[in-house]
Image (tube, rainbow, N blue to C red):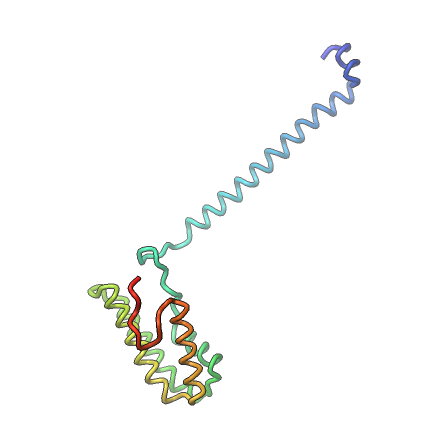
Length: 163
C-alpha cells in the first residue's frame, strides 16, 4: 500500500498491521469453530452407528425384564410381604424360562408367538392371584389394564389388535 493511500485512509504502519492480524484472528476463530462442530457431528454419528438396531422389522420390543426385576417392581408397587415374594418368585422364573424358550422357537409366526406370550402372562397372573390380597389383586389388575391401554390393546381377555 502506498504512503498516499495510508495517509488518505488514516492508518499508520502499526494500525495497518493490527488490521491485518485482526482478519487472521477472525479467520482462525471461524476455522476452530467449524472444526469443533465437525468433531461433534462425527462423534454423534459414531455413537449412533454403534447403537444396536432393532431386529424385529423396525418395531422395538419392550425392554426385557428378568424375574428379579419383575419381583422388585411388583414388591414396590404392591407392597408384597416376604412370604408373598417367596411364593411369586418361582412363578416369575418359570414364566421367564417359558418366554425365553418361546423366543427361540422360530417355527411360529409373529401372531402365534404373541398369542402364546399373552397366554403365558395370563397363566402367571392367574397363579399369582391367590397369593395376593384382594387389594393387591385390584392394584395388579389396574397395572395390567393401564399397560395394555398404553399399548392400544384391551385387558387380559381381549385378543391383541392387528397392527
